[in-house]
Length: 175
Image (cartoon, rainbow, N blue to C red; front, side, top):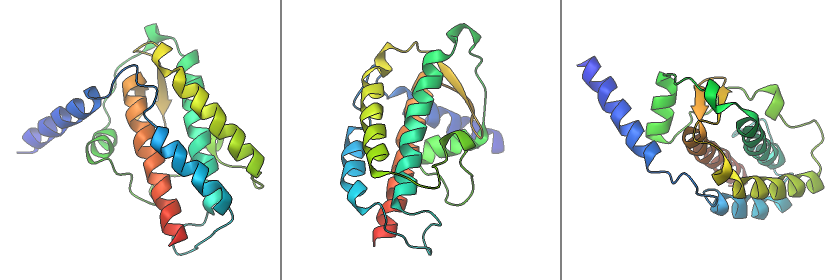
């Protein structure tokens, strides 16, 4: 029974991931509009929802998008090695990142003081980077701290889920 569930989960995850267009440079456009709309509300907080304010979640999301693009771009596709991660299968299949389980790596943690201008600059950079996603090799990759090695297609799926996760937290902060 367990083998069947693992196989079924793997098949579902593969189907979901392969539905992503390889050259889709607009996969976060809707989220970018939401981020832009939330920037004026950057100082809103709700400690019952998150220790971070709206600006923290926006900054972290944008840093993650931009950092992953840079690492994918600089990776050597010939060094890509496929890996299995049960937590990745769960998150990619469900589309949900459980709250409070993971901690953001230092490289994508916001600074103590987040400037509004920097949010706008990072948003513009993220838009530019997404336009170049189609130029990346399919085996461009990066090592995720919880999901192991992600290739380009898996990275796209992760960025969609991760950005949606933080925008939901922002919406909950604003309730």
